[in-house]
Length: 66
Image (tube, one colour):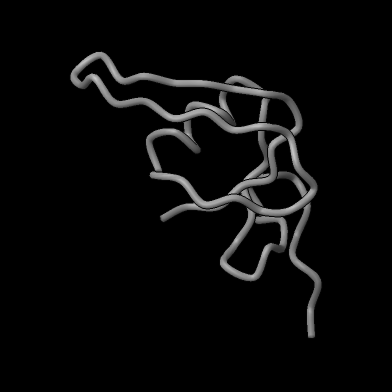
């Protein structure tokens, strides 16, 4: 599953299925199927993070080096 930090509430129901997803804003990363994360990022409601919760380079910020 993909992870993102959600900035605004967002919901998504794919055209091919009766099941959808909804996320409330949170400073904590949340896990959802890739299709929903991609939609939320494109809509400007979320920022992708990696498995550790660090922002990904495509989010415009490189993860901190350790």
